[in-house]
Length: 474
Image: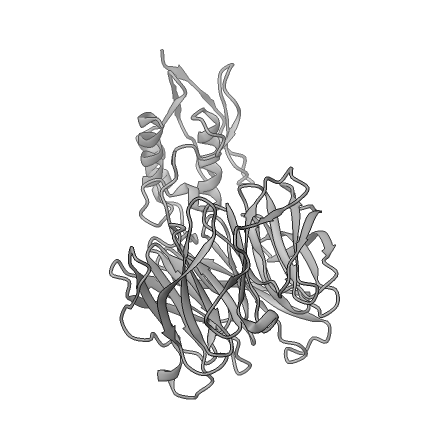
């Protein structure tokens, strides 16, 4: 049976139109500026706007940021003469096409992308070079569907933001590193102004420099390079933190990195403990007071000098270590059952000491930045390697110039993926009339969940696509 909905015309102050449904249906806010919408509530909770309503929608302006349609690599430049964040589209054959290179202040280092892929934050540990004595800047960007960036603005944060990670689409954790007592600050993010509102603060008690974020368990790992300790913090939906255990090891704990399935965590030993250690752990459940358990045979010996960077293939079969002193990249096979490491013959010499900026992975590709401090663009850029089933490295294309000196900041990838149930716009795991309300909110905010036809934009066509997706079920 079809149920008709009563509709009220919007007041003259352009507040959203309110639709009042018959008993059993909720009240929804619809689009501003529309004179009258006729909505049919079809049996089973399927909603359809009339043709007249869609025509009115088509007249509304749209200017939304959205997650990139293509997989995209982002590179931060730690450069005092004018830092930038470069973006590269990752082509199907592994080659890179530069999409953008946006100014980001000076000395950009840490990068984090929101889980929905719509927003990028970059932190600048600039010391006093930015005119701030005890603070630094963070810059926020909208990420557009074509992988370009649009700056939203900058905010002042505590000094030395060497790491950051989004806890969810509205909350970010920023690590303000200090030699004796680093601080984790969590913030509620408002992109309209923009502002970061402090939610919580936790002192690590040591020199922490990076994060590993396990969103599946709502826990955050960081480390103290001086006490050789890895710390775990639990966080809630609001961004409140609570310390939840630590483990100590026999070497530095640099670049703590989780496997894609969050079963294992690895750290690099740097110049400590004979300059050749990589330590591995099994990750315990958040309820276990002991956060990590050492893997069989850990620590593992690398043939390179001073392990500094770790990158793990998404399939979980191979791990690659970048070294500071000899600037080599070397491979290890990961045992799928127990996470233990076995050296492979995979090897690449990037260049001079300290040349490796960062490393990351996407599908079967490994990305490495060469930040060699030479004025020639031929001596800096992004190296791409395809990793085959045996763990061998084959370079793909040339060294890609990033357009700005010192590409030694974070290297991160946004990998778009279709949601399991795209019509479930409120993310509660089921289809219901509430998803219509959530889609309307996404449309009004020009949020990524509005894009129901995956064309990289938020437009009236997405309403028809949402109806089709809803009717198709999940």
